[in-house]
Image (cartoon, rainbow, N blue to C red; front, side):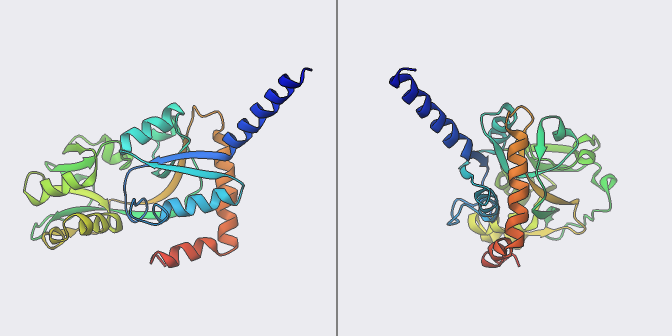
Length: 244
């Protein structure tokens, strides 16, 4: 084999190996889990980065609108979503890793509103702000006895809620408090979080069913998650970020 061809082959192999060791990821700002102001881009990104690093992979994470991130993972142009909730509907196009955190998805109402969540039927006639592409669970997604107003992120719905243009919105309480306190902390005095939550959702990474490396990616994360839990890294991340 000519030396030029040999060198070209070696270069191509090295490039392929380097590419295989880098896993691309995306998500929308969702503090404290995905946070542009966090030194390591958020608690969830820090955990996933550590898990994959323990298996020899580098995570390359980018912030973008949720729907764009979801579409990128679905078509295989992005490897993983760092933080995704499992639903049956999503199984058609996503493969999920082991859960590594949990979120309590709560309705948010205006202070003084008498609304009490007692099940899906208690939402009858309500106008509810949602985030486009989020997985709120199959029962909520399939319900037709209330209206859903979609937005690209949470804050437009919070402003509509405070202004009386919608009845409710919903989000993980830790995330919502973090986002509102950064954008407009005075709004927290106008709003209430409703118990019980709509659901408690385990948080996963997810890769696309169309991704040729989907099984390897999920296996690497699951093994890495077990490793960082065993060596104390996982608990250290939670403690440093005030989540334990």
